[in-house]
Amino acid sequence: MFGKASRNDPIVREKVHFDPNFLEQPAAASPIVKLSEFLRSPPGRYVLDWEQQQLDAAVADIFGYHALQLGLPEIDALRENRMPLRFCASDRLPASTGARGGAHCRVTVITRFEELPFATSSIDLVVMPHILEFAEEPHQVLREVERVLVPEGHIVLTGFNPVSLWGLRQMMSRLGMAPFLPREGQFISLPRIKDWMKLLSFEVSRGRYGCYSPWARSEKWLARWRFLEKAGDRWWPVLGSVYLVTAIKRVRGMRLVGPAWKRQNALRPALAPAGPVSSTTGEAFSIRVETPDAPANDAMTRAAQR
Image 1: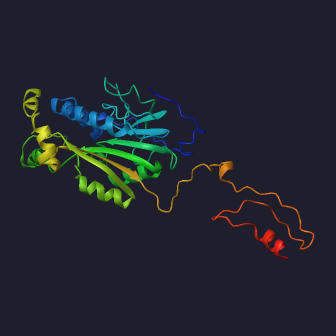
Image 2: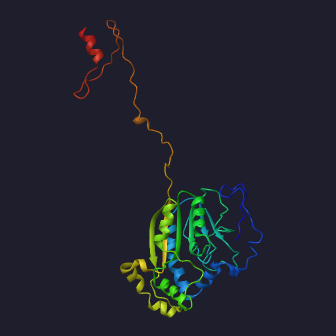
Image 3: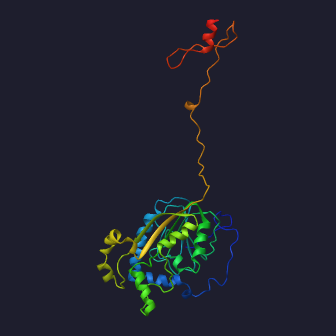
């Protein structure tokens, strides 16, 4: 479903550069298309099932006004998020959103990920499933996401772990074996992703590995290795074939300003009325009960002594 964004919308940039040849590019030119083909295979559905479960838990408690999913319409990353306006941006025209995605993405935007058509500090949540590893300029994509995020905004991304059984199988494709994962992917390790985020003042809040089954192209063999999921989480968590990481955009020197609460009248100091003026001393005195904690009025005492 396509939505129209007006120029009065605060999250839309004032100037958007459109290349008329962009939509005429063949589908095979985009590495994301080949990733989509992999995700329709049994190991791809195995990855999607794990990522959908993790994304649902990651975005459920992130609040704000605008949420953005970059690419991969095969998965509905914002399904459990409750923000009023949710975008699904892609770098190609989707033929069909399929059964998984599209129902909860209110607006579909066609754009390059290296130059997002949104205003600075206008998005509260950005989800990036397998975007950096298939982007031509992953650093620029991450910088652009940092630009559009509001202070204290969240970023959630997923990727393939090169230090895993699937990563080892992909390296063996250089020796002449058929590739298991899309050949165009430049898989980035989670520690390296954290270093990139640290340079952009992101603070990693959580990370998770998953999909510990060895490479297999049939659902039968993948089902036989399902027992490794619990064992992998406990004994070798960093060897999962897929990871998910959540980070928060921090801004130095920023202080959140809340509403100015009015003090209750009970907390305000009460003014006592002035007492009568002494005819001899000209000093005002008041009458109150003297207690050990509150001695009598000094003016009255001095007036009595005189």
